[in-house]
Structure formats: structure tokens, C-alpha cells
Length: 291
Image 1 (cartoon, helix red, strand yellow):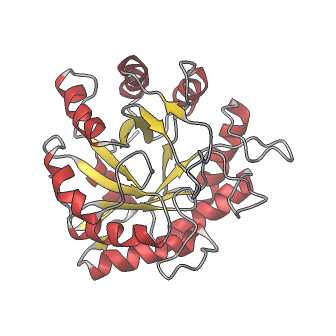
Image 2: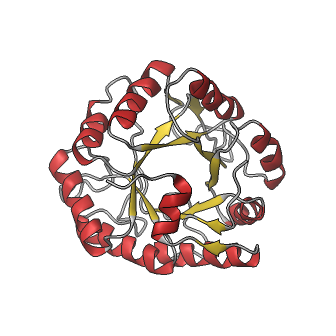
């Protein structure tokens, strides 16, 4: 694996469906820009962005409206010009016209590419489903459509992998010529029906990645996620946190901001002997080409 002494820190500012009336997640362009600045000042050089409906009372719903997405991106770049945008693209079902239109219009430096399908499941304590079982479907033809646009627009794909076979699939995409350059792999760990948030899994998962891959952990959960982040940093991986991934600090208390979560990752990185990459260093590490 490609190991860099300096760690690239990503902040996932807000999730897909989290209700801003329940959790303090950013929704409006101003809120997204404020949280991006918090994250940047704490040490993040990349922000992973989902986009929300800007209609009052609808902020818990996702949106691919070009005008809304553009206003959010403009607000972030105006407030924090040096930061890199990693645009979310994940949608269930075959209609990917919304994210494709946004990729073509805004040409972010990076974008998520969900690399395989997963039955997205969770049960409550009584064994009942926490939500109706759903398939997050990412068949090869869907992945290929995203990668065709990303390659055409010089957007670096970040492969989000929810299970071990999906990690291995990225190598097959590489062999098939579906993308160029080193693979950027995010190990999504902690989803109940996906890879467990267990630090001991990381060395085995690293063996399944294409040579020279860049990688990070996306860990979903509460205080149990932090030992996984620490081990990731010790093994040379990059790091991601944010209010999309967790609301909880290592001591079990609730986080109050994205900046607070990034500060913890930065501290962990330095305890692991890693320094934090600057924006220019992060672009060089990740192979982001000047435009």
C-alpha cells in the first residue's frame, strides 16, 4: 500500500437524511460554509458534501437541484478557497441523472463512487427492522456510468466499499480499464450488514487493495469507532470523520460541531507519528491535477 507520513483529513459535513431539527447538521449554504471553515481550521483539507433540500421544513431530504448544489459549493469555496470538494453521488435506483448533471456542471476535484451493492439492514433490540430493508444498488453498469463522467472531467473517484468483496471489485475495475491512476478506497465500516468496525480487520483488507492504493476508513457508530480510526492512522491510512459518520466523541459525549470531530482525528494522527497534510500536500498525495 501507498503510505504517506502526512495524513489527509476529510470531513463529511452532513449526512443523507439526518433531520436538522434533531441533530445539528448543516443544511443551508451558509451553514455548510461555516462547518467547512470549522473543519478546515481544525486540519481537514477535504470536505465530503451531501446536498439538502433548501425548502423550509424539508432540510432532512436530499437534493440534486443544480441551483441549490451550486449555491452550497459557491458558499464553501468563497469561505474556504483552498479546501477540496468531494461530492457525494450515491442514489438508490437506476436514475442517476441528478448526480451526473452535478458532476458535469461543477467538476469537483473528487467525487464518491459507491463501488458495489449492499443490503442495508439494521435491527432494533427487539429484533424488528429499524427501517424497511433496502438494497443500496450499485451494479457495474451504474458504477461505469459514474466513472465515465469522472474520467472525462478529470474528477478523482473515491471508491466507497461497504464489504470485502467490494474492496476486491475495485481491483477488477482497474484491470478492466474503468478508471486510471491509483485507487482511492474508503473502507465503510460499522454498518450492521457490512464490514464490522473492528481494527483487526484492517491488515487483511489492505491485502485486498490494488497496489499503490490510497485509503481511509469511514467508520459509522459511537465511541467504538475511534480505536478503528487510530489503527487506520497507525497503518498509514488517511482519515475521515464528521457529522455524517458519528455524533459521538471518544468519551461518549455528543459532538457539538464538525470541527470538534476533526480536532480529535488530528490529535490521533500526531499521536501515531503522522503530521497533517496541507491543501497543496493533500492534492499531491491524492494525485489531484491542477486545473
